[in-house]
Amino acid sequence: TASGLAPLRFISNGLVIVPSDDRLHIGALQESVESLERAEQATVKILEILQHTPIAGIGINFGFNDIPLNGPLSSLAQLSDLGALSKSGYTVRKTDVSHNLECDGEILNATWTFAEGQSEVYLNFHHNETSALNAAAYISGKVRKCHTIGMKFLEQVYECSLESSNDVS
Image (cartoon, rainbow, N blue to C red; front, side, top):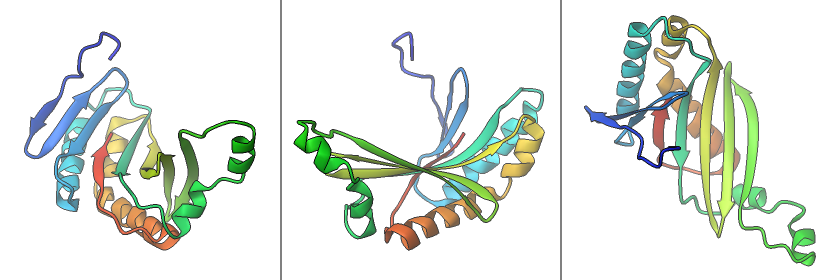
């Protein structure tokens, strides 16, 4: 935070809740769809209780770390300008590749980060919404669907079979 203090965190029932100035982050402490569904239920309850709170959107997020760079993923990490950058004396320390996709009616923002031989991906299923009650209705029952879409995306496009770190915000 700007004050240099660690953010306030609430941990209960396998969930972590982190409020900040512009969002409320609700994460699952265990990597399972069941834990994510508990986060979804908590999110719905909070949105219903705080139904008059203005919001700008809602998202379901999955993060994957330490992904081996092989198969189609190694091609993604090798951008066409790497040779020219190297010849010009530049060393690429980190590369981000982002895609804004639509699948099964859901918006998926996929961001890959490549640094020092490691890769990670962050999947964000985003929905613009200004009503907390509409957001609660929208997200109810969505976590499992989004998890399935995300895993299918990683397996079919990049041949990755992974476990995730997850949150709803």
